[in-house]
Length: 259
Image (cartoon, rainbow, N blue to C red; front, side, top):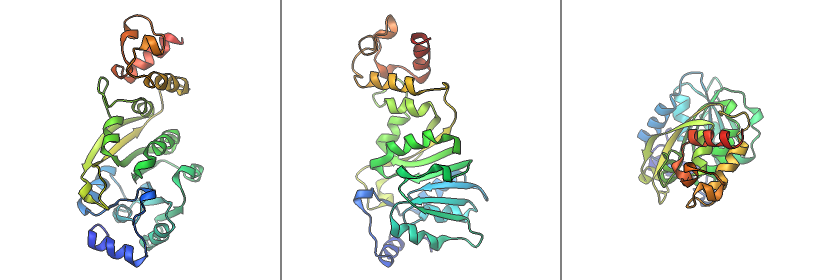
C-alpha cells in the first residue's frame, strides 16, 4: 500500500510504533505527485541500480521499485530499516543496510549507481562531500535539501549565495535544480521550502584538487576582503572578492600562482 498521503503515513507510523525524530531531521513526503516527479527526474529504469539514502517509510523506494529499478537503501533508523523489507520484490531488487551513511563503507557498493535521497538537513554538507569523494561509483544524484542550500550550491559567480562549497562541488559535478518542493508536501512540515538538486558527476580538472580547495576556502573565510589581502594576489585580479570568480577563474588563477 502506498504511503504517499497523510492518512496512509499516519497509519503506517502507528502500525510500527514510530514517529518522526527531530534529531534525525525526519520529514516524510506525503505528496504522491512529488514522489512521482522525483522518480521522473531520477529517470529510474528497469534493472537500473539506485542508491537511496535515508528512505524512511519508503514512499520513494516503493515508486522506484515499481518502475523496475534495483534499490540499495541506507537507513539509520532501525524501525524504518526493518519496515522497508515489506517492499521486497519477488525478484529481490531491494537491499537494505541499517547504517549511518556518514559511517557507511562505500566499498560494499559496485557501480555505476544513481543516487536518490531526501537528505537530513543537518548533515546535508557532509553527505555532499562524501558523494563527491565517492563519485567514481555514481553517475548522478538527485538530492532533496533545504532550498536555501540548493540555491547556494547552484549559485552563479557574482551572487551573494556563492560559497566555497559551491566551487568544491563544481569540481566534481555539474549542478542544477530539478524541482522545488513546498513545505506542505512533508510531515511534519519543515519551516523552510526544499529543492531537489541534480548532480552529474565527473572527474575534477586537477589530479589533486585538495590544494585548490584549501586555497578557495581560505579566501572565503574572509569573503568581504579582496584577494590581494587574503591570498596575496597582485594586479587587477587581486582587487576582486572571492564571489566574483567562477571555477574556471579559480583554476586559471591557481595555475598562474602555482605553476
